[in-house]
Image 1 (cartoon, rainbow, N blue to C red):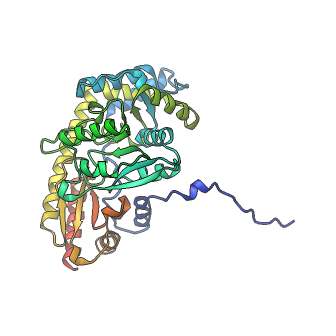
Image 2 (spheres, rainbow, N blue to C red):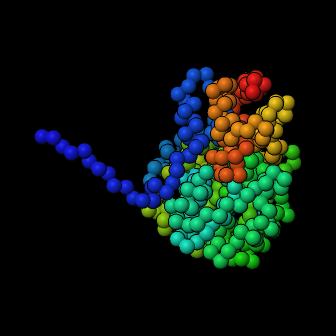
Image 3 (spheres, rainbow, N blue to C red):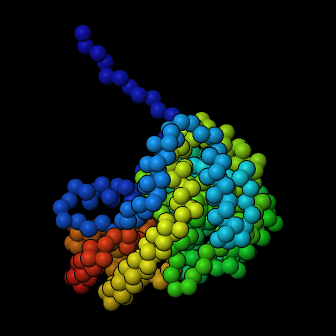
Amino acid sequence: MRYKKRKYFLAGRINLINRSKIRELFEKASRMEDVISLGIGEPDFDTPEVIKEAAKTALDEGYTHYTPNAGIPEFREAIAEYYREFYGIDVDVNNIIVTAGAYEATYLAFQTLLEEGDDVIIPDPAFVCYVEDAKIAEAGIIRLPLREENKFRINPDELVEAITKRTRMIVINYPNNPTSAVLDKKTAKAIGEIAQDYNIYILSDEPYEHFLYEGAKHHPMLKYAPDNTILANSFSKTFAMTGWRLGYAIGPAQIIRDMVKLHAYVIGNVASFVQIAGITALRDERSWEAVKKMRRVYSSRRRIVLDYLSKMPHVEPFRGKGTFYTWVKIDPELDMTSEDFADYLLENAGVVVIPGVAFGEYGDGYVRISYATKKETLVEAMERMEKALERI
């Protein structure tokens, strides 16, 4: 018996979202030989041993069952303690939800706060998930340019001009991926005041808060607009726990309760033993010593990359003071798009960098370089790039 080929009918919303250009380039490079990837932003460090041991102990102690949807109370208390100790911010446990990384925290916020007819202001360039989350929420998207002359910080005057009666939320992400920019206190306060004046929410994505250099400081938006801010954060970068999928959101209690309702139907709860490991990550001094070590290593790598790039032809690095990325301007006289430039380096140097256009229209003319890789590999990648650029 012959069967007809089945035709699949998909929900229209799935066609609204695009695959990440970062992942597409990474997959292309994986099919090539002798390629150095400075693309995907993942710490090359292993999770600190004390955190891994805490997870193993938790398994042995029976943490293999469901937890409350919002997260284990003691873990949420540890998160609240962290904000009191580091930033002097009082957070109630009822204002916290434990999520599968900052990715889920962001998704829940978009789905809970936005719907058709609402607008969300998203910086440009910006990390790729925000625009796709907005599409799924059926919200209108307003791109707010981040300009080099303003050190890739949000301009409060331009923010006010972008707000309309449909605007419901603004996304900010500092230290910033991809530009490595940090937010100064004055601008943070201004954004908080604007959000309160216009009654809009701030989704503040802050996973790179501990990777700061040259005396830069982090200013959590919870300080400046606590009733308007949903803060998303993650253990992935700080504690090199990308594969653990552990994060959280903090916000007004009613919004968090509504996020918990959706979260309960998406994943139910984050793995119980992973949450127990999160308590150790936040409370054990050994985990924080590991974070300090990572920051010192990243700082050293940053200096190496900036030194090499500053001497190369056709590129100019922005000296951002956060994350583990360098945002690099392409010489306009080359008349190359950021995708052209990234393809050239892949084909002629065997080095993967991320084209700035992957992060938005205003990212074109730049590429993002990750220095979350070993010194020897970084040096080789820089030398390959230098030789390739000298041949243009």
